[in-house]
Image (cartoon, one colour):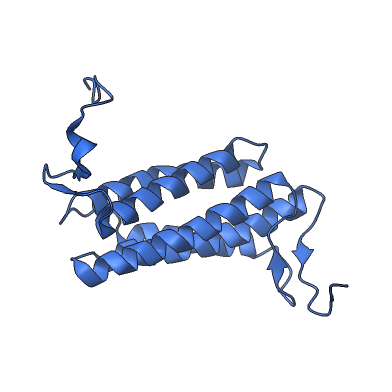
Length: 184
């Protein structure tokens, strides 16, 4: 494979537009750019999670997710392109069920925290929700395959469960919301 980017700046975006994967141009603040840009941000947040010590199963899962997010970004960047399929969503569901199997049932809400890896995973989860919202907004304006939204929805659930796993693995445990706590 040859060089994909031989020159980083092109000046073509100085007018407030950006090129899509199909060669067309769109405003940088369009819903499409917001959707794939937020997917890119999510991928970066997962990279931060991967920068710390993790259980091997979590590392393998999140590394695979990063590759799929890159595919999803491509799908959103190229109108009419399909990259995420039902099998990708089913794979997330199996991983989610696998990680969740050993966790105790939730009886309280969990606050983001529980160690550095868990806290970063919670942040990635919130970015996944924002990416989902941005993709839903795009789907109201243009054609978006439902698999894109479904994938992001399952991924945010998976990141929540992985954050729980990481909080327990850190030895710090989950931070439970104390609904009776009052500020003085």
